[in-house]
Amino acid sequence: MDSSTMRLGVGGAAVVGVAFGMARYAYGLTLPDVRAEFGLSELLLGLIASGTFVGYLVGLLCVPSVAARFGHRAPTTIGGLCGVAGAATVAFAPTPGLLAAGAVLAGSSAGWVWAPYSDIVTAVAPPRDRPTLLAVITTGTGGGLIGLGVLGIVGTLTSWRVAWAGIALAAAVAAVVNLRTVPRLPPAPDGSAAVRPPLRRSMVRPLAYAVVYFAACTIYFTYASDAVRSGGLGAAAGATLIAVLGVSGLLGLRTGAITSVLGSARTGAACLAVVGVSLALLALGEASLPLVLVSALLFGAAYMVGSAVLAIWTAEAVADRPGDGFTVALVVGAVSSIAAPAAAGAFVPVLGLSGVLQMLAAASALCGILLWLLDRLRPVAVPEHSATSSPGGASHG
Image (cartoon, rainbow, N blue to C red; front, side, top):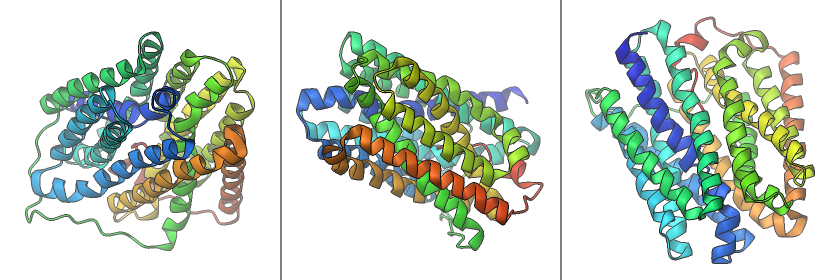
C-alpha cells in the first residue's frame, strides 16, 4: 500500500471515527444529564434520539445526488461540517429545542460520510488494497468510540457540555485532515445520481437482518449510559462502557476472516445472538460493573463485525450492483433506527428500562437463532470475488 493510499485511510478513519464513533452516539452518553438539566420526559428523550437518526437518513439519501454533481469528497466535507455545527449547537444550547436541532444535525454527519468512502476507495486504490483500506477506515469508528468514552469521563468531572464541545473540535480537525488527505474526484459525467434499488429475493434476509440489528444497536447506544447510572454505578461507568466497546470493536478488522469460515448469514446470525446477550447483561447486571463491562466487550465486537458483514452480505446478494444493495440496506436500517428509540421511549414508563432492554434482548437473540437455522436449511453460495471486490466490503454501521 503506497503513501497516498495510506493517507486516504487516515483521512477516512478520522472523519468516520468522529461521525460514527462520536457525533452519532454522544446523545445516548449524555442523555441522563440532558434529562436532569432540561427535565424532559422519557417519550421526548426517545423522540430526540429518533430525530438524530432522521438526520442520518436524510444525509444518506442526499449523498448520491451531491456526489454525482460535485464528486464523492463533497458529501464527506458536508458531513464534517454538520458534525462541527451540530455538536457546537448542543454544547451551548440554552433550550431543549436548540439541543434537539443540534443533536439531529450532528447525527446527520454519519449519513453523509458512510457511502462516499466506498466509492473513493474503489476509484483510488488497486483491488488488492481495497479490503485493507476499507477496514482501516471502518476501524475509525472504534477509535471514535474510545475518544467519546474519554470525553464522557472528562464530562463527568466538568460538564456534559464539555464532551459535546470536544466532539465539535474533533470534527473540525477531522474535516481539515479529510480535505488534505482525500483526493477530489470528478463528478459523474452527466451530473446525476444512479442509485437503483435492487429488489430481489436474495436481499430479503440481509434486509431483515438490518431491521433487527440496527434497532438493537440503536437502543444499546441510546440507553446504555442511562442503564448503568440507574443501577447506581455513577456517571463515569457509562463513559467507561463506551470506551470498552470501542476497544472490543477492533475485532471488526477480522470480519473478512470470520465470514470466510462461517459465511455472511451465519456471521450475521451470531452477531444478533451476541447483541441479545449483551443487552440482557446490561439489563440484569446494571448494578454490577463486571457484568456491564462484559456486556460492553460483547456488544462492541458484535456491533463492528455485524455492521461490516452487512456490506459483505449485500454484495453477495447483488454482486452486479453491490453499492445499490448496500445503500438500500442502510436506508432500511436507518428507518429501523428512527423507530426504535421512539418506541422504547413510549414503553419505558410502562415496563421500565430494564424490561425494555430484556424484551429487545430476547427478540435479537431469537432472530439470530432463526437466521442461523434458516441458513442451515437453505445455504446460499458465496461468489468468490464478492467479499474482496465489493466497494462496501468492510464498511460499518
